[in-house]
Length: 289
Ligand SMILES: [Zn+2]
Image (cartoon, rainbow, N blue to C red; front, top):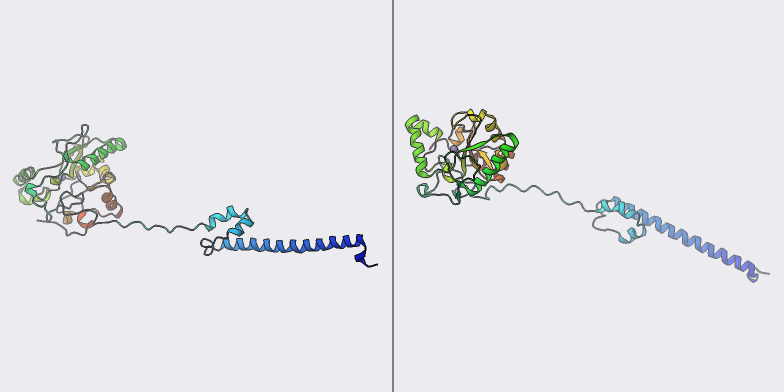
């Protein structure tokens, strides 16, 4: 009797064949699965290949790998380079520009007839010794600056001078000439047509506690003057005539004289440590007329 004719042996043989086929198929599937895992591991550990060629079928086969694999296949965004500061964003010659540079070699064009736009009275609550108006943006920045000085450090600041007309500057300058002579007057006061005060964006600032005036270094040594020198940039103002820049600006140290240039430029000058508009914009120094 052959085995094939024995029904029980045939059944056992058939079970063995099915078992063998099962083992072979199982082994094949196991190998395929192993290769799939290897492929996923390789794909997810090779940064160059992963982002552009995600293997969706492999991820489907081994779904538990997907969550941990996901972060490594996320393309890394290129680090944006900080935008270069655009020094041409505003005019330095137009007297209405917040970046206009006025000094002893850069007078206001047609100064006798120039009156700034949008001059406003400063709001109630801002002490203003002579009631001088300012341009709107400068006045708004003064409100913020004065509020911060009071809140942060307890200083009550005062506007000692703001917008001056051409005629007003002529009167002030002539007064200095009378008392100091022309050389003395030129060191501390602009000739008419050459004053930042005529732009409506220059403000002489003092405080109520120090007793300092608009002369000498008194205010620069006072706590309020030192707070202003350190913090005015945050509100768009620069100390226009620093102590060590007389050869550039043409003026002696004026710790009370601040110029509104906007927060963008003031912050950039603060960041770069360049303290005069002439140097920042690469303009010639203006020591004399
Ligand atoms: Zn001034």
